[in-house]
Image 1 (cartoon, rainbow, N blue to C red):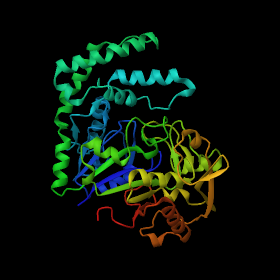
Image 2: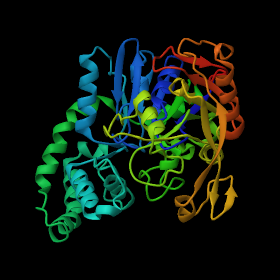
Image 3: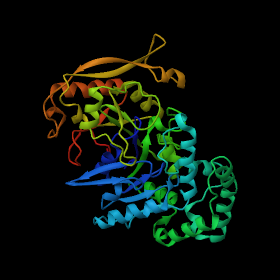
Image 4: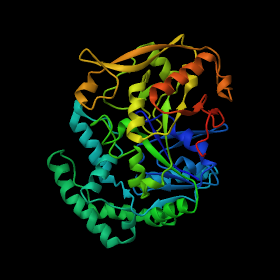
Length: 428
């Protein structure tokens, strides 16, 4: 049985939650391997809608063990709040596993995040202000706080004091903010220790043993490929690696154990926050995509920027992730357009470019080259097989598949768990 990576092939918000949840009933473990509560997944089960931010989508599948891996940064207050909200709705969260090596987001991380963005002004990155970047920075600078530190008060105190020695200088002298009291931070963090302890585990050992025992393990990326800190539209990116390689480092599983890499593609393109976006629309079509698609960030609450499908980005995602399949979501949103433009290449300085330019400047100036595909007006939400789709919808899917460089194995035709056409099994 396979170990799979499931990740966003655009700028995030592609519908990873639905895809993960769809597979959740057939897999044994669902693992978040990067990001934090700056990500958001919406999962619709029957008439119930769940908005997940930090927890793996598999937590909604009774037979599945949800795992927060070492590559995730965890705000303990958010984690406990999200667990409490699910418990109140009758969801069993007792099987959750949390890596003892995951880093903790503290109040001083969120403070630094917010004041830095305000200080940057027009040059701001567009972060969520939830402390994600500063927490990853502390991790790399080796002054981070890990989950396991909650269970040694002496070490925790030393680490918090060391981190604040420098940060308080910056807050006071650069940002004119009051210094943060280390003892208060330590007390707050210790207050979470007993509540979190039942979930803390050596997740790397558990996951490797599970794969060796033939269990199905699904690794779930939190953001999209174009937000990857190494391979995305830097600096307008997240602070971790949602690309396929991040699953290995963020969960402690070697690449030879991964059998399949599935990219989630929206039938058009969206992004949240600042940064270049070649196919972005500023007209009635963009507003229609936003309204019909319900394009508002699950975590941020911000309206998403909307544009037509970008095949250049899809090809890039196929290349850097080694994608074996695509899950195409929100095809139903495009119902009603007489013609649907698809970006097949860029024009940069008068030249046609069919691959994503490595230069940030070139990408910033890229103009989309569109190919027009015929649209459809029929309701596709009840379609159960590919052949039940209108001919023009079938042609649209096949064109996107050919342009993107990997087979489309499933198609979302509505928000519900059962509104999916499965062409090829992801678990074969």
